[in-house]
Image (cartoon, rainbow, N blue to C red; front, side, top):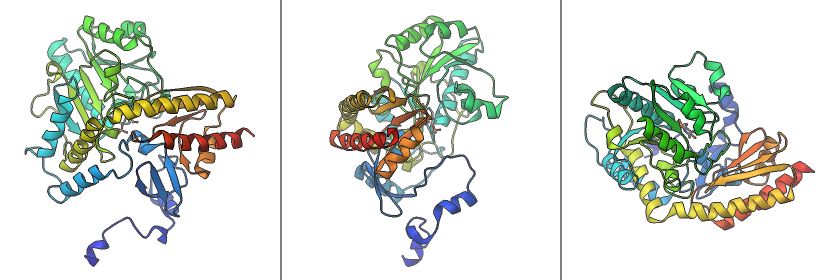
Length: 409
Ligand SMILES: Cc1ncc(COP(=O)(O)O)c(C=O)c1O
């Protein structure tokens, strides 16, 4: 056992300057906050110096059941001790159980597992292109919206309608058309005989927590039906309870043909999923695959997470506590003239400022023990674990209030 301990990479927190070492060894892709996190429990995390923070970032909307939720820890520990990986040439039980749970609790019929959100969307686009080849005379174009975010693979950068992600990599793969968000007319104008699908986030997350107009998604659904093309909903950020229902489409009175999930599905163990209606589930053996996709440990974590969310109405908690969060953010807007807007759905909320003070507010919150996300230079995003309580929201609001006072004075 003593020897095995030496292979564990956590622990001995104060032995090194981790941030200096990171600068030495890591590619500079992340703008990191100078805090090294070493432990988490529920909605709380601790840094290497023992400082405690209320976590309203939640691993970028991933820690749906909070940090180290006991049901997931147990499921993962048992699976790690039983079977860590098997190739997809074989059947494995956690994969089948998670697929069954997803299908039984959604409008979709078939599942493919992968490892991240970008990979799920990339696969969904491949699925739509296969559908186009088989049913739409080879149509392959996907219409997406400005302000969207679909991931970092080269194809998903092309799908993401934000030039800051696209510019560094031009030329991009073709087959994507980015149109104005919340405009069904723009989607209609972009649809040609080459279009096989429209891909949308029910609420644009990374792009600004942008809410759809009331009739937008129903009108898009109607248009897709009229044209015989597919509707792909990217529920990677909105899914598994985040917006107050298990999936955001359930609030919109529509059903997607294809839906993608990742982030909160397995409480932080990497996973992605493509779900499709039977008629859109057109892959045949060999047309798509993944070494790690459907990995037993990830699926065990996903099964425990999703089962807990469903059985304990965690989406209902997200809805109720989310309403409380939005109302408290609204009170801060009344108090501070520098806040120009607050918006959100469930436990996905944003606060916008009249100037570029978001980084200062993030730092002022950090100093007082609250983690929040800088969404844009002039906006914050709040995406705490879905199990957060109203009392913990009040605690966060109290800190945010003090941070805003310090920045505005
Ligand atoms: C809506 C949406 N789609 C896709 C992605 C990409 O997911 P991943 O970072 O797991 O590749 C994200 C990540 O923020 C997202 O919010």
